[in-house]
Image 1 (cartoon, each protein chain N blue to C red):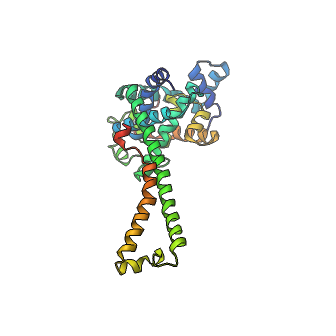
Image 2: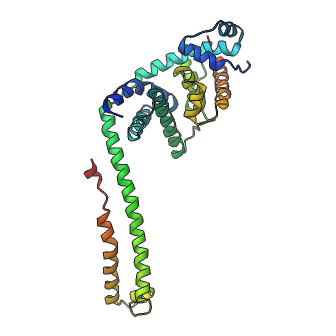
Image 3: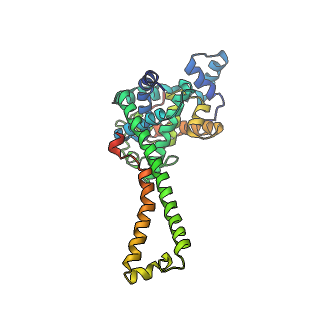
Length: 162
Length: 150
């Protein structure tokens, strides 16, 4: 990737990617690290044959994998599929203090990732399946479950959906 | 709430703005799709808020980091190859010595006896042979130091 192409690619996608990673990690420093490493890896590979959309999917996939590795290496209490951040789960259950962001953070990491890619990034189910390395049919089901869970949390916290 | 097969079409319509009449009618009657429509702006608003928090380095800094990463990858690779060659050379050296001096007084098989008896002439000879065998490869495949690569 030449300098100019990378500059455009980085300036277009770095912030949305950081937002995605931050929603997963809830840690600014770790998000910085993961985003930078993802772009470094992009540069170290020959992706000249890929389109911008494919490169974007690649960088999201790389960031997700780096975060999963981080969870594994640190034997984190938060697991990708099931766990929620225990610290967040223990937040006071008062509706006035809670907002949508806190409700979103109560979801499992996998659910946050799915909802973010589908709703914030507008990725198709096929693209999400490729990024998370799961089947397209699984994406549909998991995304539906994530949505149900999100609605349940919103109801539990007394925050209206609409 | 039931799983809706049209969720994918709905998200595509939101993305590209191409709403069919059929899809519009469906959304009005489908609870799952209506909840999607309700959640979408909230998650997008959260995305915008999160993006504003990002403080990222200039793209040139990332390019420099990438250069360092690639050089370190090369260094690690050369280190692995060098290690493999060093290991192989030690094994080859041991086999060669055993083959050449296996039955003589310089036999490396009796290394512990030589050590026990402090048989310096044999020990020094073995040491010199080992150094010659090992270090020729070490200098041939000497990996660059981090300082040199940077």
